[in-house]
Structure formats: structure tokens, C-alpha cells
Length: 599
Image (cartoon, rainbow, N blue to C red):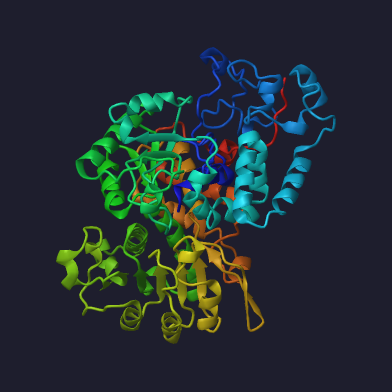
């Protein structure tokens, strides 16, 4: 998943953050991050509730559901009014300012006389967005809205999430990342480049908010299936250069025009960043690594998992959402996880992360050692099936998956040899689940489970139509990018989307709610199980193994509650006392996009 997608989703899905994802991404999530104001409120005013506090987890902005009925003072450097109030995206309501507010805040004559409700504003904007035929134009229009009126932007997304998700998420976000230098308007995150080496703490202090609780950071080397996009993704970009020749020769490229730093130079910059983050924001700040290439992703996660609260969405988030789909799919294919055999195309961050979490879940269910449960899982990389005879030449993260078997050079032969019940694609290589591969899966499985996870749509291992058609309508299919329903022999087949956005917002909120000090594998398993149980019979009848995304806030609240519950059970939670009803507490902490009434 692109880190450009990540932060707006945290707020829409779970509501915790003042994100500007897809370059709507901020350094933090405003409710999940619960930042201290970036407008200059004094400590006394915050403590006394003058800013509209009294909400969820240290909410000082009055942005969550618990504060919807409270009156709010629109502070900036001073009380925002007149022209400045209309130019402040956090407080601007446009034509929804009431008569009383127009008088109190010197808005008379600055707005047309008609007063619109927020719902009418939303209706008008959706009408306008639907006029655009080019998805990138919709993306840019929404970016403009977010820079004018944050609450309306997020209300639009929350109320129309299934329609707008493909605009601010895959597949459109991939094009936005590729062209970001050309469509760049104004910076909305932090850029930490090699030029800032030795001054990273100072750079972090330049960000106006202080009480940061969640940070998403990338070095932009592996964006979706698109590769090295350098500085063209958010929220915190560690710019160490790029090896993308097209960007290096692009006059509009906004990052460092030099080859990527590696080795000690790279490691020292990341170490300085991680040290500065903890020094500036404290022990419990959650750092989410996003879109790092394999050779750095695994090393960073392993290095900092014992000293920091860290999470890698490409490794752990993808694994959790896929495991949830597999658990749910058992109601359609039968048996337990231990009864199935898994074959992956792709042995990078996503593939090995998913494989390890599946092995851990089987180990938890059967009490067998994880070294034993791994033997049910096979991986194919660019050189063929990962087997014991290749062990000496394998990267360290592939070695646990090298099992005893004769060498197999391609996916089709691996499918025929292993005879998996589940085929999972995380290769980033489009159209690799060929007709022959899918037909082979269908030849020895009544209901072959096929997950084509690579993003964006162009990189998907196969389409939904191909999976259904080549399996004679018997496949259970889910993908990383969205596909339309497919009619096969008079039956409407609805493909699911194994979308990381099901997991990371609720997972992050659960960590923040509980004050977790470290991420434990059992927290990821809890998130998977919490998602799986929310797939209902009506969804299974359509062939779905994930619940509808329209219910994402309810889904995320339940995931957050289960993650927090597990953190308390494991003794990892520091936020005491434990709330009596964790689901209600999670819901109360979520961002509310409704306009507030100004004094």
C-alpha cells in the first residue's frame, strides 16, 4: 500500500487523525494522534477546556464524537475571524456559517447570503465530482477541498467511502504518486533529507503540533507495485535520493536529485530519525514504516521492534488483513487453517509477512511449533519454488520457507507439484495467474481460494473476471485493488478487496487507546480474528470474505477494542484504568466531521 494513501484513511476509517492522505497525509493522525493544537492555544486554555476538549484519548481539539455537542472556539494564533477564518481549513465552514456566526466573526459580506447545511454542501460536491471523467482530476479536486475545508472533506469521504476510495486509494493514488511533482501544490508533511543529517530533532520541532502519537514514515523506495518513487509520497518522507532515472531527469521532481544513499550513511540517518522521534514525542509514539524496499524493511522492523513502538504495514498489516480473509473463507471452503496448503507467488515483505502470520495462527490453534506449521506454506520467487537446495543463496527472510522438494522453476509447475488449496499473489507482477494456473487450481479444488493482492490494478496477478471464468465460477476471489462484480452463467459474483485499510486504522487506535508500549504478534492475530468475525452470512452468499467497506468505522472500532483488550491481557498496556466498554470507548475517540457551533 502506498504511504500516500495511509493517513487520510486513518481519519476516514477510524477517525483518529488530522491526516492528509495521498498527500493529504500529515505526520500524525489527529485524533489517533491527538495532537496538541497547531494554532497556539496556551496550556491554561487547553487545560481549562477553552478549546473544546473533553473528548476521547487526550482530545484537545474537539474533533471526536464525544465533543459534537460542545461549543468550540476557532483558535489559530488568536481567535480566527473574518477572512482568516475562511482561509483556515480546520475551521472554515464556507456557506454553512450561520447568521449568528457571520456577525460574531466578521464574515458579513465575505460570503454569499445563502446558508447551506453541511449535507447540502456535500450533495453539491458529490455532483461536481461525478462530472469528472478522469480519476486524477477527481483526486486533485478532493485535494483542493481538503485544503479549504477539512471537515467537509472528511464527511464526504466517510459518507461516500466506497465510491471515493478508488480515487484517494488504489488505483488512482498510484498515478498521483507518479505525477506528484507535476500536481504539487503545497507541502503537507515533513521532508527529512540527507541535507538535514545532524538536525533531524530540529526539523521535528518545526512541526507545529507537539503531542504526536502516530507517525507514518517512508523512504519511497517501493511504492505499491510501482517501485522507487523517491520523494513523491508522504507523510514523513526520508529523502535519501532515488534510483529512478525518470525522476532524476524530471525538471519538476521535488526531491533530492541524486542516487539513493545506502549502507552506513542510510543507517545513520534512520538511527538519528528514530532517536529524535522518541526524544521529541516520547516512548509511546507509534512509528509505522511504510513502502520501504525489502532489504531495508525487514532490517528496520527487526532492529527497532524491541526499543520502539513500531509497525510495518507492508509486512504486518497486509498479513493481518489476508489472515482475516482466510479465517473467514473457511466457512466457504471448510476445514481449519491447518487443513489447507498455501502457495505464494512473491517472497518479499508482503509474502513472507503473510506466510509467517498464517504459520503463527496455525501454531496457536494446533499447539504445534511454528517451525512445523511453516511446512504447510510454500513460496515462489523470481527463481522458482523456494526449496532447501537454494538455502545458502537466499535472503535471510526467505530461509524459513525453504522446504525439502526438488527444484521447480515456474509457478504453473509449482501449482501442479504442491497442489495448494490457497494461491496468494504478492509479486507486484501483473497477469501472472494465467489461465493455465487458475485451471490447475480448479482441477483439484472444488472451491479454489485465489488472492491476487498486488497493487495497483495493472499489477494484479489476475482480474476477478479471469479468476471466475477460468475456474468455471467456483473460485473464491479477493484482490488488493477493487474489481467490479462479474456475472457468470447468470450468477453475480462479487469480488472482495483485501484492503489494508481494514486493519491499520483500528490496529493503531487499539494501540493508542491502551497505551501499548510494544507491538506483539498476538495483537496482529487479534486484529485478524476481529475482522474475520464481522463477515456475515449475507456476505458469504455473495462469495465475499470481507465485510462491506461502508461499515468500516464500526469494523475499526471492533478491531481497536480487540487489540486493546489483548494489550491489556499481555501486560503491554499503560493507559489505566482500563475502560469498561472498549468498543464504546473506541467509538468515542473517533473523529467526527460534523461542523461545530462557534461562539
